[in-house]
Length: 240
Image 1 (cartoon, rainbow, N blue to C red):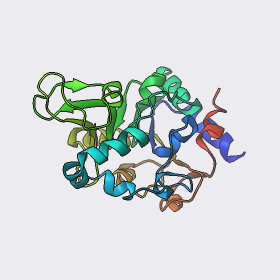
Image 2: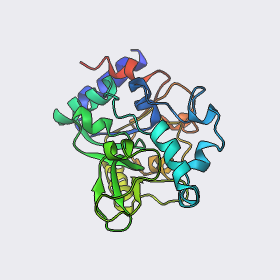
Image 3: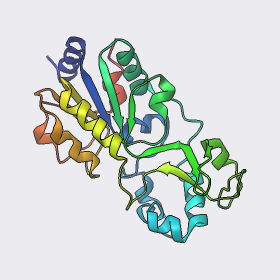
């Protein structure tokens, strides 16, 4: 039995699957990965992306933050790929209990997944820091070149994404821990497992069906019960 056949058998036999995914889930939708060879970390800017996407930088150079953010973080025309769609189908079939994502693009919801835990927030939620009014991603994208301002009170708008130096949402973390600790099968895909505290969530899995699907090696490869070094689309595309 090939590794992919083993994977398909696990999916077929389980009704308590949790999927934990990173940037590699969305690269096949045209959204760049931060750490791959052609990812954002290897492009040239006045500042490295992790500096621009920090809480300190946002406070001190908000206009420059938004120049980068509009250009490199908002992919509103992106469409869900086969992995997003298959996960939504598996949830509808009563097999996938939750999708836990490090991505902020909203593509899991666009594909039809209902129980999505967004560890790092979403570009689709933005709020006025003065009056709290909410705005969608289109408002940010179409708000000119400077700092987007609230149309109600004129306050600065901040995206509901977790920047470097900011903590993850406590409730989202607790929910992720709950689903992972209760899972029969945990599928981890498209993540380097290098960003904490998100990567540490795997420690809460108690089962013996940890599936790791990633093109490159990760620090957790040795812990996987089933390790598949391939693109997610290649693997998920075989789910009937």
